[in-house]
Length: 138
Image: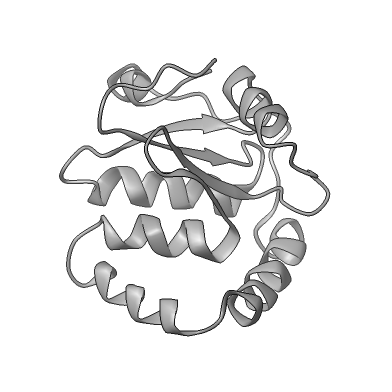
C-alpha cells in the first residue's frame, strides 16, 4: 500500500539511469507548487505499483506517474503530465497531447531503449540529500 499525502503525485523512475536521475533533479528544481514525490522503480514503492497495476517491466521501465485520484500514467503521457505541472514555459509541452500516444510512445521508447548507452548508468539508486529526503519514498 502506498500512502501519499493528499494532492501529491508520485513519480517512479529508474533509479540507476543517469537521464532519469537528471530528470528528477530538474523536476525538483521546477516543482514550485510542491506537487511531486519520488521513488525509484527498484524500491518498495516501485514494486508495489508494478504489482498493483500488473506492469510488464520489460515494456515500461523508465517513468511512471501515480496518484490516488488519477491512477497511473506511463511513458510519454506521464512525462507530459509532469511537464504540465512545472509552470511556464514547460507547461507548453502539453500541446504534444494532440499527438496520438502511439506516436509519442514510439519516440519515448526509442529514447528509453538507448538511455543507458547515451547517458550512462549508475551501480545503485540515487540517494537523496537530507534536504530532499522528504520528497522521496523508498
